[in-house]
Length: 81
Image 1 (cartoon, one colour):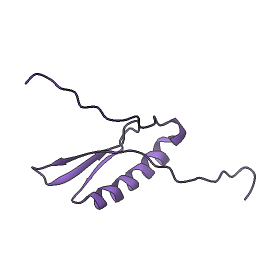
Image 2 (tube, helix red, strand yellow):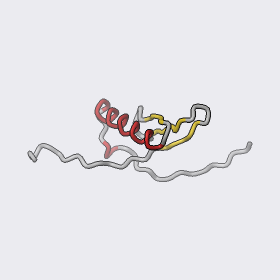
Image 3 (cartoon, one colour):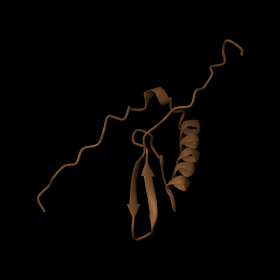
Image 4 (spheres, rainbow, N blue to C red):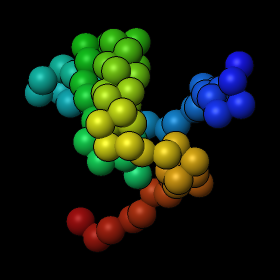
């Protein structure tokens, strides 16, 4: 491999996934990457769609995956209701 060519290792990103009962679709977003959202009838389809959209976002927006915020966790927040 030439010295100026960097080997790109796979990265694992975290998607926030919800299920929409009206459309019967899983909806996923990847925080920290503009435009990184998709949907699918199954979780496997959603994962495939998110992979495609992430590749496009990285290529088109020139995103450095090292700059994407790391997943820290989820919190449930109780509100009056």
